[in-house]
Amino acid sequence: MDLGLKNRVALVAAASTGLGRATAERLALEGAKLTICARSQQTLETAAAEIRATSGSEVLPVLCDVTNESDVRRVVDATVERFGRLDVLVTNAGGPPSGGFAEFSDGLEPYRHALELNLLSTVSLTQAAVPEMRKNGWGRVIAVTSLAAKQPSTSLLLSSVARAGVLAFTKVLATELARENITVNSVCPGFTMTERLLELAEAESSRGGVTPEEIYDRWRSDIPARRIADPDEFADVVAFLASERASYVTGVALAIDGGIIKSLY
Ligand code: NAD
Image (cartoon, rainbow, N blue to C red; front, side, top):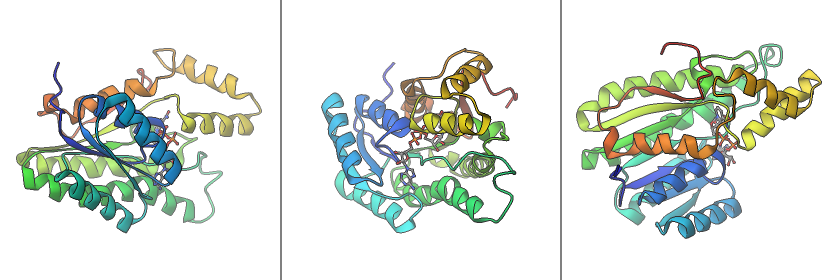
């Protein structure tokens, strides 16, 4: 199937490692021109060079903290300056610290930070990118959230709260933008092998007095597919949503989770 991504211009946020990196690489392999952004110059340059080498696509690396509105504007402006347009936006950032109400029962600061990191960064990236899509009457916005967006978790309180907001934001936006040929969807990764998962395993192991390997075993036994995903399995689904082929898919929150989410929707 030709995804129709050749020469499309995509911006993938937080793309030097993990799910963002895998997504950027997949889009580049499909022929898209890319801007990738992250906070560290060195990992960003390395990721850009590696993606160029594997895909042959043009990759523009731009330093950006996605919680900083002016950084976000700068990334979108740099993309349009370099490539002349912006067709696909993948919003992404790191996840907030794990823990439940016991850990976050004193003060609002951790909540503010989580909302800035995961909800408001999605809003500001979208605010900056959508006007560029409107100019061409075509666009794809894909927000990376979490299984916690659909199935709030006692060990991921901050993430659960912030991601639910992202699902509401993308649903409203999808309804408003559908007539302009711009689709807006969220993706909800389940357990996927990245640095974030390593951090979560270590945090849970130190709280529960068990080894990280025992935590992985527990997760695997909870996942109907009985395994942890590879980031490429996530990236393939995002590439489909970004593609010409997904033109009538909008407003969904798609789980890429090996079946672990138990809700109907
Ligand atoms: P990761 O922690 O491995 O990578 C996240 C990347 O985002 C890192 O490169 C980090 O430097 C960058 N980043 C963090 N804060 C940033 C900021 N303010 N501005 C720019 N870049 C920033 O995470 P991942 O596994 O790739 O996950 C991506 C998203 O998906 C995260 O929000 C994560 O919580 C969520 N998620 C991941 C999993 C999983 O199993 N991996 C499951 C559910 C949800």
